[in-house]
Image (cartoon, rainbow, N blue to C red; front, side, top):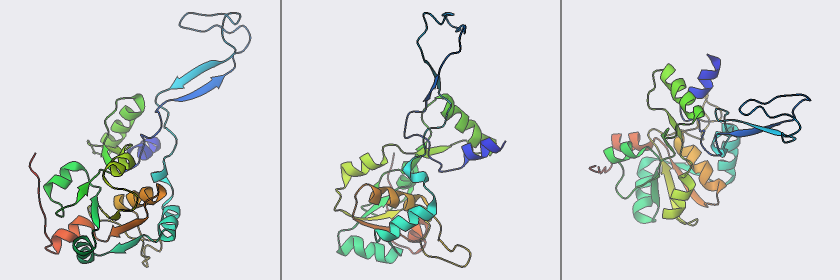
Amino acid sequence: MASLTSIATPYRSSSYPSSSQALRVKPAANTLFSAGVRSPATSPSFLTIRSAATKPDKPAAEVEWRLKRELLLEKRVRGVDVKEALRLQKENNFVILDVRPEAEFKDGHPPGAINVEMYRLIREWTPWDIARRLGFAFFGIFSGTEENPEFIQSVEAKLDKEAKIIVACSSAGTMKPTQNLPEGQQSRSLIAAYVLVLNGYKNVFHMEGGIYTWSKEGLPIETEED
């Protein structure tokens, strides 16, 4: 079951490259091939075997947290509390980028916030995607997620590279070291911030405590009807 554990890890991305990988195998002499049984004399010098269930290459968002944190600090991404985030939104034209799933966003979000999902429900039905669905189901999770492959394109359609952005998710992580977490703790919003600075965004902040703390502090919330 060890392989299922890695398949079913929540927020593990899996959708950037194609889900098939090619393996080139040189056929041995006198080898017959199924599905037509072609002899070596008429067969190509190389046989291409594709496995649609092979996991794609690791995307940027799966880079080790320590390395992501180093880049975030290097690019001067800093955390702000929810009240500071509200002030920056009102007084300095900052945009709150809510990276939660669309359904959570509609249930309640800061007024004026923009929603682009960092993770979404698994949509495709390749053998690899089916295997991941089964992995999630093994742990009782029947709505497995994958990294949104259109995340950065969707952000670029709404915000230019000079935009002042505060990234937010549900409860958020932190880059601040603690006794138990000397390197802080990553979250969807910090992964999103990492992807943003990796793609040239220059003014990226991070909301400490996330939308949960925003709501708990009694700051304004708006909802959307389907």
